[in-house]
Image (cartoon, rainbow over all chains, first blue to last red; front, side, top):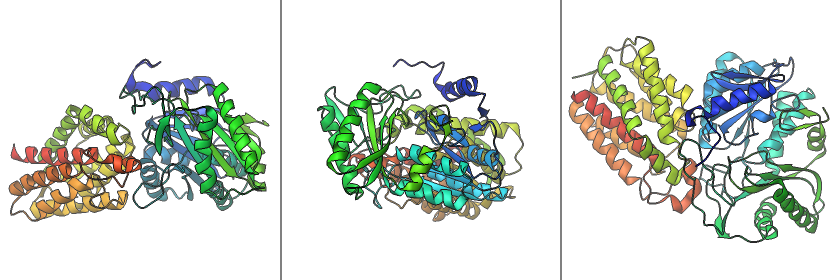
Length: 333
Length: 206
């Protein structure tokens, strides 16, 4: 295994030092407990948005801190959820008196730590709401699993809620909007290669040279099935079919289409996938009103991609288009 | 024979040693059905707990366990941090203020810890989690005539519970995404819980 690191134990600290060096003009970095926060936080009278999760998915979440998106992000160790004290400190740092929203991806560890933070934070007298994302159709949502994983839609929830919060919308309004984006979003991912965490130094799973895993999770969790690799058109169809079947996207719907890279796949290939997504969407009578193509919720060096579709309404479009100025996502600002 | 501050410190030191020694084993078990961080996380958390224990004086066994709980909650993350943190926090709270804890008090503390883990993780017995080692061990302790026998029975119960996770299909945590493919793997959380009882018995025996 070859990695650009100083030591496996210092990955998070060293990366945060880089974030501070590169973006210190707009974010402040706290090391203990670890969080990244808008330099002008707290913004008086604005709902604060805090997200967090294991590291290894960059630019999510730290790269999305800034006006029009998150107020703070709490990075955990690689693929390990952050701890309650990080979340509590970040929540206090962004509390502008209008309440704070925690955006949490549905993973056992993330949910438990954010739950503990909310319980422990009660004494701080800050009103906290939680938006749980669970858009991964690869996982069967049943009593016998931890439920659907939160993946691509998380980025879109953070952007749209960020726009609404910046616009002065209330805690309840922003929370409802975020939950609506999640409820109308569906995702599925695939991998060409596994990823390697710095701590283990070993591939997270084995995949033959000519095989792909369809339905992969962002930590290398297994998906629905494996098959021999086919053309990009076939792979895209494998991801789009379950997405389209799961949510009754119907002819005439307006959607946001998000083609996301897992970290190791060139943008060139992501655009090939996007062309196939656009073709399939058109065949189903869907109008892609907005799109996003690039590496936004990654899985270290994994090669592969995920596709997210969100059925849009006017309010979502308005806040998607609102100005955003973060290290990883920037327009209109 | 009773549980006191020094034996509790000894227990935590031994448990930290066991987590360091078996770090790779736990990583390997977790890589097979989870995300491969259990050994690394438990080792990091228990090293942090030892630092915290050394940095201040604890008056009684309950205070020792609460210190460990806070260190785990603030340094581990993942699922193990909240679960082990809650276990030690509930135990420590149940034992608060007592210089010496006898068998009834000790098993009552474990029962509180067990209930805390259940309410935090929402797992049922047979879901292939740490609960599958914890529950039989606590039950064995509750039925024991004395502390010595109780802890040996608890170690046996935890070991059998740990071994019994191997054929199970996981229904909680990241292993649950594997469905049937999670069979034939021993649960890493049940394994670290077995080490917790093993070191508790060793600390008492010495």
